[in-house]
Image (tube, rainbow, N blue to C red; front, side):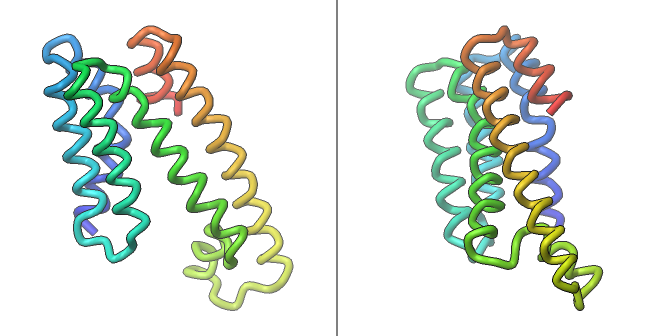
Length: 156
């Protein structure tokens, strides 16, 4: 539980750490932060999916080290949105949906209407991850570091 909370917290503040870190450190040193978050996410997880996601984040960290460029660091929020889109989208193909699973923690005997509703909410979340990931990508490629950090660290 502590590890999951730490990963969620680091993921949430990651853009701000990168933004402030870029003023002090070369991007290759900030790649250690990304690698650490990736490894924390995967270690102890029995699900191979999270190892694949961690591998993608480690790939971004590796590109950062090799190029000493901030762009791969800035693509991490895009990766997070992509991973969440895959998780939520896969749950629509292989029910129960992600939101239904959460709802059943509170209401184990969810009726058909509740199942349909939670499926619709899961679809809405998928749309959110597409839009949010698209904006994260656009800010990574075309916006200043300040705009990138503002959107990905505070707004999103």
